[in-house]
Amino acid sequence: MSEITRLEPKPKNPDRLNLHLDGKYYCSIDALVAAKHTLYVGKEIDGAALDKIIWESDRQRAFDKALDYLSRYPSTVKGVTGKLYDWGFGRAVVELTIEKLQKYGYLDDAEYARVYVSVNGRAKGERRLAAELKSKGVSAEHIAAALDGFDGFDKALELARRHSRGKDLYDQGYLAKLGNYLLYRGYGWEDVSRCVAALKKEREDE
Image (cartoon, rainbow, N blue to C red; front, top):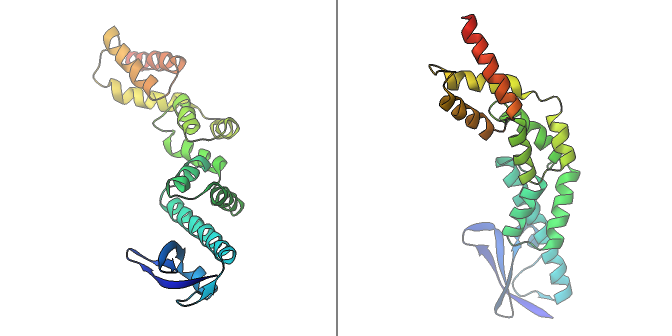
């Protein structure tokens, strides 16, 4: 058995308590969890019971931190998993937290991909959107579903119109720049060729 010799709020986070056993720092613990288990200075507790309490504390802290992060930065399973590890949580706590977030609908890669395409699709092509979602850990299945029905040509043409204002569409040097501009944004060569043809026709019809 060990004795709790010190239990006080962390200086920069009053919701966490620094716990000392037998005169030595042992860990930090969630204040609500400590209150729930009536931890106080002078109480004697065995190691197994304390480890169980710490496990509960870490699970709650990980979930709360993940929720706070998601409220400010929508993310994917891969993104939140990385954050939890960066915050120092172990594998068991991380996996349990991700499972809980998914269960309650706070973490949904399919919905993230759908919203991502909706928000970014006006300035980026299908290839770039797919590559960015893949880098965020979204599965190929969710990416395909989010891009289903996505037509990049109209958006590419809108960007091309803005880029080509006052430019000579028969200048090969400029056309190369326009092509690179659209390719960088994730549009394919087919879209680039169609845009150039459409722009030339519009100029001729003016």
